[in-house]
Image (cartoon, rainbow, N blue to C red):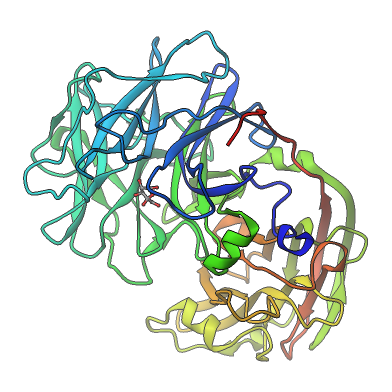
Length: 537
Ligand code: FRU
């Protein structure tokens, strides 16, 4: 049992037991952060009685699990309460829109409000008497109509919301409008649709400031913002950046989805069904994502739980305007314990050194690499290469010139087990190419786990900027942020030996050229406080 439970995390959000998936309705309201999430109260696998579990926090790090907010009780949600979002109605308080699986197994949209607005935790929710408020429109099948977004107020004072769908061989965001938030009418055309994706799950639609890293409220619409449209399909969260034209009810992306590896993604590893919210206390937009298991169903049942939420990430538009940037919320630093630091340390070709003195199974590490021999990088003939393919073709043991170099996380002393997060730098046709990879091939002395390699290009010029990497390591999850958050890779790994005190952290350089660590800061992480009610199931 000790070994099985060694995969539970210390500072990631997870319930005491059972299955978790999508984050639902995240919000800040009157001093309290709320996170609802898809939960199966009856087991460690996805089920046919999915509910909205509910937790609250003052800092997004330490949590209290409350009684469940929404459970199947009515004909319009009797077979599950699926994903949805919260909207705070000015002067009136929060409202939840969620998908119910009705008595005919059809997906419909429902509404719920807090029973008592003066309860600081908003523990009890009342379903609206006139549910459902939206049913699948003509032509849309009952299993392709779900996951309402946070609603926004448009130029004409109407509320707008989008629902994920698949219709006529197109993935789409179906648009609904309302004057009073109760009566909703479908707009004639979807806000966006495309033949190049699958069914859109958990869409998200929000403005980002053009000139600032601050977030803005979901209804903000002016010349200082661009709009992000995100959809979940093919196991990833893809997004576009573009312009929202409310007068035409159209979204015009700078670059449409192509259905290829070139599309923008929040994370190149495991991260799905995410959702953002605007945090009005700190004026930032925060992203939560579901990170599922990658061991076997038997393992999930054995350990009695499945699924994590990512560390909440602040999200904003990059200076280039071409992509989003993500960074763990600053509150995570409150958990920093013992710290070790290195400055100006040369890592010779084919060498390795251990970062000692911290709890390597529960750590935060931030390292910045300088590349004194950049001009010697090898040439990469880059015409439409998929970064993930480059990473699976050459794992961390394959020598190059400039790279692979990076971290060996959750490693045994003798390196039999190790998960590498690393870079390779190439000279491309139009300047340098920075590749970030994760290599799970030696993550566990076990066969029945998924050991896929993940990869991403980072849009930086190493002549002008050093290459940075931050990894949050938490027993069975590693969340990595490359190039100051311009590329993210999340891994789930299940070491057999590299657990607790047997886990080590190394820096390695397997290239023939040397690299220099200009700085490294690594911290032991303390455990987040997660409490739950006696009767939590
Ligand atoms: C995404 C999803 C949603 C759905 C929910 C059910 O992971 O499939 O589309 O509402 O999970 O739990």
